[in-house]
Image (cartoon, rainbow, N blue to C red; front, side, top):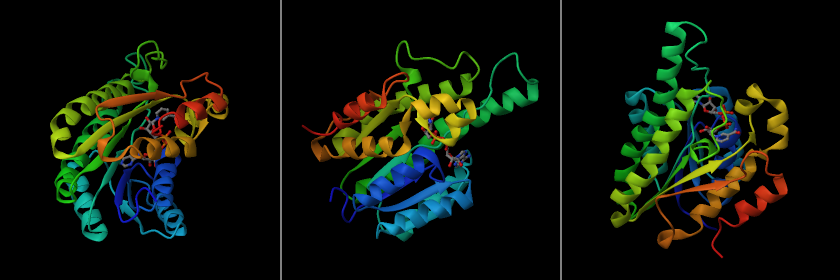
Amino acid sequence: MLLEGKAAVVTGSAVGIGRAIAVALAEEGAAVAGLDIDAVGNAETARLVRETGRQGLAVDCDMADRAQVRRAMNGALQRLGRIDVLVNNAAIYADTSLTGGDYESQTLAYERSLAICALGSFYCARAAVPAMLAAGGGDIVNVITEHIKEGHLMTGGAASGYDGAKWVQWRQVETWAAELAPRGIRVNGLCMGATDTPMLRAVSVAAAEAGMRAADVGRAVVNVLAHGADGPTGQSWLFGASGTPRARSLEEIAALAPA
Ligand SMILES: NC(=O)c1ccc[n+]([C@@H]2O[C@H](COP(=O)([O-])OP(=O)(O)OC[C@H]3O[C@@H](n4cnc5c(N)ncnc54)[C@H](O)[C@@H]3O)[C@@H](O)[C@H]2O)c1
């Protein structure tokens, strides 16, 4: 098994893609701590992880609060004993248009969008890297979006907070990879399209049903990790762009694995 004896932290693990990634990593042998603000959904994810026979922890955490993230990451490290893999998946998709709502609502939504996703990814990475160095290396995966790829911006301007946070996550991949490559830690990003989750269903049920399943993205993470210590770093992988038939998306996901 790819991750036998290893431990992973997944953020935004209570539903959707985060839950699917947590279960996919556990199926590969990893103990998994999920960090989420939704305690009920997160407890269910931990139960699904434990159903695979692996240690599964649900850790309450608001990713926008750096003190909470520090406590959550320290707690996860203490209970798992190590951290080999960090998946920065938590994000919100909020209306941050300049013409909607009022000053208070839109500026707050913009702050939360950036804080949960862009700052939260940094908080987790900063907390995880010392543990990865102690374990002799590791992997950070930022779950981004196809929006950051040329020609794939499709939010129509309503979610500049979401897209801004994703641009930060995208730049984190390259910059962190440059810093961490000599120290045995790889950093990669996933830039995928529509996936059937509560987030996308809230925007468009039709797009969700036409898109990938969350488990497909779980497989994509495993395939990227499967390259091991000599694997690629600093890459943001595009797959399953919106409008792609799912069968083709699955081929693109399979192609992420080592030949
Ligand atoms: N669904 C898609 O079509 C799609 C496409 C491309 C990229 N993505 C990305 O995939 C990731 C997961 O998206 P999803 O569709 O599963 O979303 P989702 O909204 O269905 O799930 C997001 C999870 O993040 C958690 N979360 C929200 N705010 C939090 C906070 N402050 N602290 C801790 N946890 C918090 C939620 O409780 C939830 O469990 C996101 O980064 C998203 O941008 C999704």
